[in-house]
Amino acid sequence: MAKKGARVQVTLEHKCEQGVYRYHTTKNRRNTTDRLELKKYSPVTKQHEIFKEIK
Picture (tube, rainbow, N blue to C red):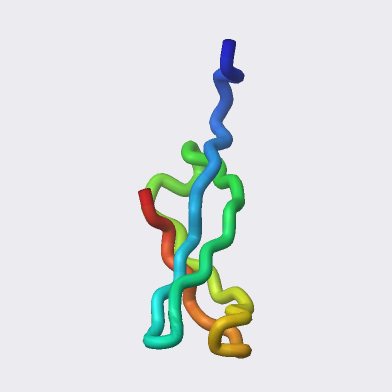
């Protein structure tokens, strides 16, 4: 059986002309009910970009 907790795995994605890059992380759905937006490093563009949560 799967764990029944507040943490869920999410995928963060950044799209640009050069391509797409994704990060996988977890979030607490009780504290963060809306979609995540984090500023992380993108090796595609070689700079920090905003990554948005996708389904």
